[in-house]
Length: 201
Image 1 (cartoon, one colour):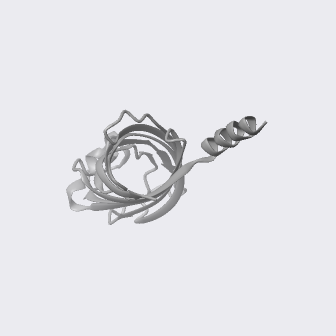
Image 2 (tube, helix red, strand yellow):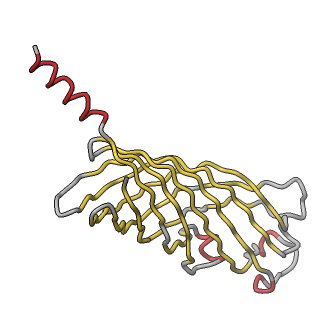
Image 3 (cartoon, rainbow, N blue to C red):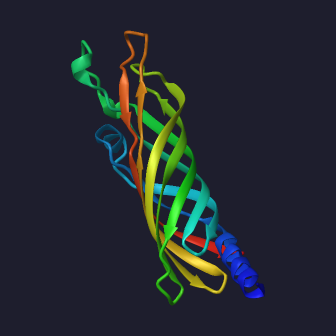
């Protein structure tokens, strides 16, 4: 009887054993959509912070915040206008503030190495400022995206490095009642490559 109770206690304790961690996740992020990539084809710095929990060293969930800002040139579709416009005379600023909930699967392979795959929804707060007279010059909108991330936690004691790559699927439409303002279907897909730094508790 005691042996059965001990085995039961061990199994239950193992099932609920977990670790927590916090991580700072800087990286380089760029747009992959045709229009957004033409606005700014460069990669820009993205900052993020993550709080996570892992059960049984294999399954986890994390809450992430990230910020991304880019500045480029306006894109004017001349075929929609009765006259030609020089797009290089106008600039566009795009800021994304993101909040994610990600489910993660980990595969410990020894020597402090733990590759993982994560997938989950993202809420993005989009702010666009454009000095062109042919679009709304200031737009703020909230949308829902999806993301997938692949990485490898490399541990030394309670500290770890986390090289990762992340892809975000994000579409958003901007419809206008003003006939002088161009409607815009935005492909805000992004890819990010980064190196996280974290600590486990």
